[in-house]
Length: 370
Image 1 (tube, rainbow, N blue to C red):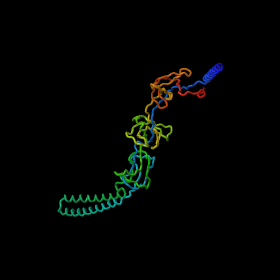
Image 2: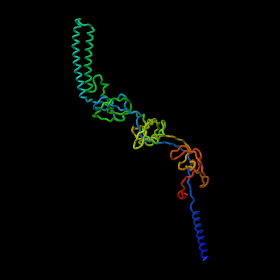
Image 3: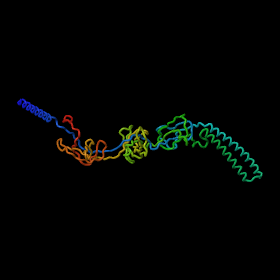
Image 4: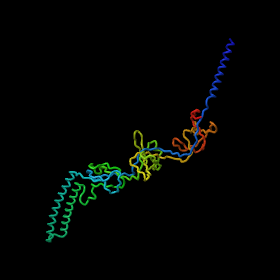
């Protein structure tokens, strides 16, 4: 009985020892863990935020009529260059019946007054010739008669203006002739011959006949989210890319940040504007969509590594990397970091060019190409 127990114990010990030896052999037969490395390099790092918007003229002037009527002729089209005072369109006046009737009645009143003053002047002239009245009385009669003639002529001109929009002697200043008020390019002519237009006055902004702007002075107008507006300030540089102009980057300066945001699609957006430094040989059409990279900070030709290589001490939160000192042997190096663009980060001290920095993820030999 004792002999069989002893054999059982010895057999168990033998099996345990054999299993341990097999386990150790398999562990030693496994391929060693291989870590890839990357080296720092010098490059430009730009920290920026992006705003979407469009390219617009710095100043766009809307040409509106001072009299209501119907477009009779149009002399320009979009893309034409005009100078201040150039003729843009001509309006045919459609008279208001009430105003026309009032003007006609004013002519009749002026005619009656003129005839009365004419008769009075003739009587005074006869009395003066006989020596009955003085020269002063005669002069007063002359003045009243001349004023009556002037009033009659003015009533007739007023009638012509109500009926046609102009009158003799004032054709060059007629409201029916719409002229450019500034020099520049005609961006659009939103009316056609035969369209009715409304005059610009205190109660109505009027119908736009043409839009004119200096296309050599363009701005970027866009919006930034409230989460980004705290990072930007006026006078920051912008890099503008226009979707319709590939491989073109235009420089600009941030001139304006709205003091008040507007709610759009559940988020608060702030309007920004930047003056564009446009090359004279490139024509940018107004209204083109564009993106603006707002340069928050930049460092040129600095030593940089990928942010993914940086580790942080669990206690001190001090950034560090592991640098290879021999074959697959690494040591810790504390870092002093600078600006980051989200992918690369500037390294001010801790590593130098040529250092092999450990990539966190361990790779099997076949994945690492070993």
